[in-house]
Length: 262
Image (cartoon, rainbow, N blue to C red; front, side, top):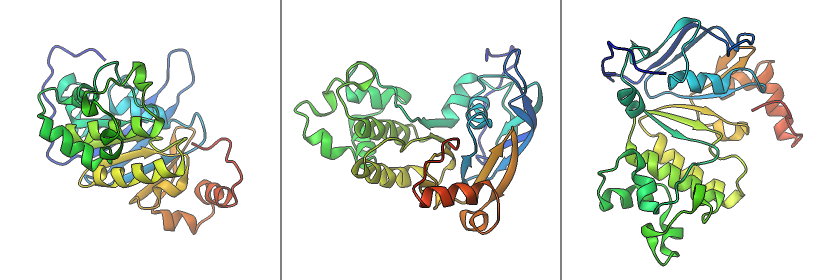
């Protein structure tokens, strides 16, 4: 959304995220979110699951202020995000998406994207934490390697680790993970999971994940359906009671595709 005339920088004291009775609909469509109440504590790791179209991706879009809700309020650190500056909101949030967007530039430039003035030593430390050093060492040009258009010269797992290094370097208090380990081979997923553990430390984390196994270390799982929270609790709590989470978990443990859960 365009900045208003009376914007002020977002001041982060505690990286809380709050949706207070938020209703949102895309133009000429039915509401995706209906009076959504969702409150995430500073430093909490929260996984979002639910059927396709339940509103999970819309929640991510509203946190980043891509749209204004029809009613209700989104707050970060207790502040309504509508009148804050775009730059300060972007500085507060890092994102690791399912398909990392890389530019036809060097890996160094790609990692520095959120922090253009970072030193080479800082970039290398981020690469170490993101488990990038093994494949960087195998590249003759190292960090000067050109990624190719959309990272075409890298594998999917390598692109994800570059995206994690970028987020580590940016060091934002709020982290959004959008299917960050989806469609990867087992070896790549293990490397990325350990990198994500380092990235998530001391941050407020909100994640969408298809495989519930990737959310088992999270503090809380929130199940979204038809734009509302229908279940909320620890993985163990939700596994012990009837509901969408336990049904999905049972299907996945039996290795039966959960066709409408993401």
